[in-house]
Every structure is written in C-alpha cells, then in structure tokens.
Image 1: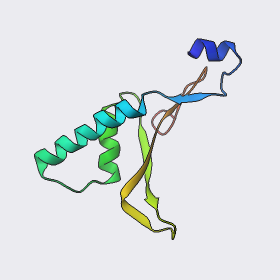
Image 2 (image 1 turned 180 degrees about the vertical axis):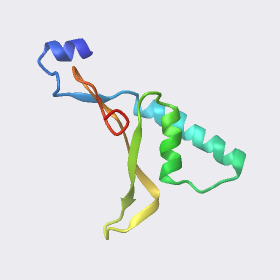
Image 3 (image 1 turned 120 degrees about the vertical axis):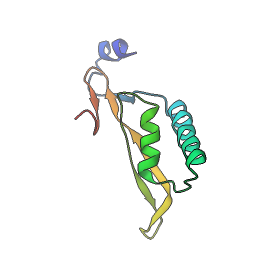
Length: 98
C-alpha cells in the first residue's frame, strides 16, 4: 500500500494507524481484563487502558483523554484513545516517535 500511495503522489498527505484498532483493542482490553481479574482491581484509569493497549502494539504508542460531557465535566469512565500515525512516505508521528 505504501508504494502505491507514494507513487500516486500521496507521500506526506495520507496516514494510517500502524495497527488495526479492532485487533489492538480486543487484545489490549483483554490484557486489562485479565490483570483486573487477577489483581481484583476494578479501577479502570486512562493510564491503565493506554498501558494495556501499548502491550498489543509494539513500536507504537497510544494516547488519549477523558471524555467530557456537554457541560465540560470529565466523565471518569469514558475515554477517547488514538494511536501514533504512520504518514505514507514519511515516518510515524506521535508522542513515542517524535
């Protein structure tokens, strides 16, 4: 895919996540569930969610934030998550690689 995008003039103009969100989410959140069951810890923080997602995507880093309701108040058990982005013909951009 990279070669096709670059040959079509899309270098630096198109990006994708390095790993499938569905696969990474399933694997990472399963890791979080197993850790929770084994430890008895039921406190799911953003940091724990991101750390478990990181285990499913070697070489890439996950980032995120707490969701806010319509009044701007953080919702403690709802997260927005995103992964480092590979820009075709360039490099991976994100907190881990920059």
